[in-house]
Image 1 (cartoon, rainbow, N blue to C red):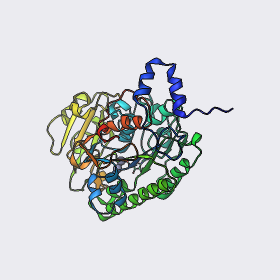
Image 2: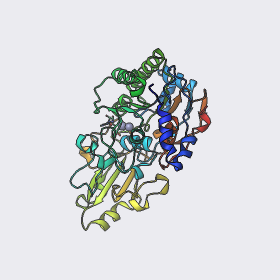
Image 3: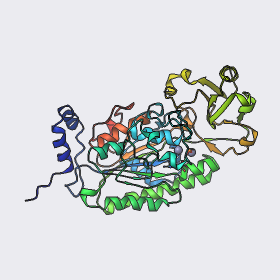
Image 4: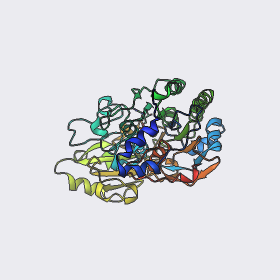
Length: 418
Ligand code: AMP
Ligand code: ZN
Ligand code: ZN
């Protein structure tokens, strides 16, 4: 006779030999599955990111599918991104519950003296796939795979690296040209698999809204159209799940918002500090600078005084509310522009100012993100007060029935849970 243990039973059996964790197993027992196939212990959790989606895009009358999910489930008036309000740091925060200063992805561009000669950047595929950049934290998929659960990522920053030695069971190399509909169909295909190889945690990522926001600005019709386009993909996902009778928990977020920028609102760094006193690590809505050898006091003198539309700190003196500056990867000096302003290296760079940008103070109204969650685990029509995006991690870990690792987050979404 063949005895089949459910995945949850196996996990709890395993944990039974680890008394300290048994409590966690009981405490985090996943919501009972309402799936048609009762052999599946946990309703799959689909974490969707719509890059750069501002909460007000939901009020433009072009997102019926997103609005329906919010009505059927829970949503937040806004979700606070972490500082800096840019893509890679915040995506890693969402799946680790650690703010960028603690998860190690302190910027889209960064350096590390322990990884000499290599610069981490969005365009540097080799660096993005090098686990050394990501190993300061452990994302949901790595923990889940280690604990015997299958995961699948249809794009997510970090998912291409073997973080802590583990990759998702399924993952794809990031390619912005893959159409939104194809991403959805790939994910649905993973859910078509037999129970034993079906993932319980999946991600889905869309960049269209962020791209349009940068190119045309947050108020532009093209950005509204991009929101409508991604909303269609969400409709395709919901319809695909319904056709399969899969009752998944969908947790839909953005990483940050978007602010209008202009060539008229530029701070030129070469007019603030002597060109040979610093090396620019990153610039834009905020800038990170390192003093050149012997130039520390020159640079400090130039930066650490009042500036119009910009404030600079030594990394040790960044106000605590930003939770930023302890990590060795944070450059020695950080300058933050007023929302809508840009810190550019020089006038030539300022010519390339986009119509929209982000990276500003994570509590600024324009930087706020969205949070919508729907599925069998969630009550209908709940509107949560704004919370920090570190709280998404404990929620997802709860939904898949895993004890979360220590993080900066807490289960603030608890009132929305059945
Ligand atoms: P930014 O607006 O500068 O914070 O960066 C956002 C951009 O990052 C998006 O528009 C995507 O094109 C890009 N991006 C998103 N995910 C990935 C990934 N996994 N690998 C490389 N680039 C990515
Ligand atoms: Zn982004
Ligand atoms: Zn962006």
